[in-house]
Image (cartoon, rainbow, N blue to C red; front, side, top):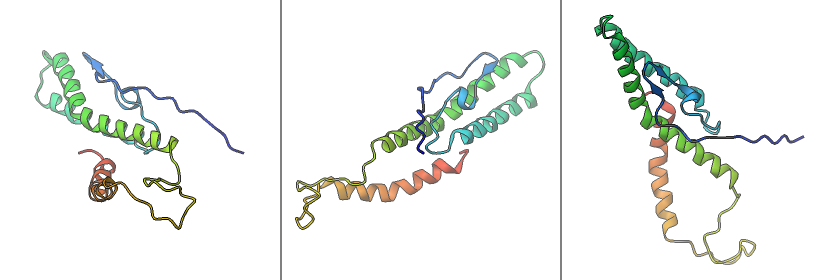
Length: 148
């Protein structure tokens, strides 16, 4: 039996909090499960938020505590935005790639059924392959490595 379930998504919001209230994880940046990074992003958010709040607890007095907490939340948001928006975009791209996947790609001018014919490939294909072979491993290591 094949069960089909639709996954609904929304765009990421670029302001996660107001004053002494902030969001983290899926509340701030929901992701599709294609890369398995949603929970990881929430853990990284918590880690960054703890780092920012520890700075407040070490240097602040009770008088300025509310303003310092609001500033810590803004710093947390600013430090997380680049990584989260990148992972969110890659997750969405992976979803689109999965939905449009075809088991072959034909860049030539000859039908695939005619296997004896020589296909003429587009000159950009070998260049794109070389760039992907070089850049993709580094990007995936950064994506999976976590906080950084």
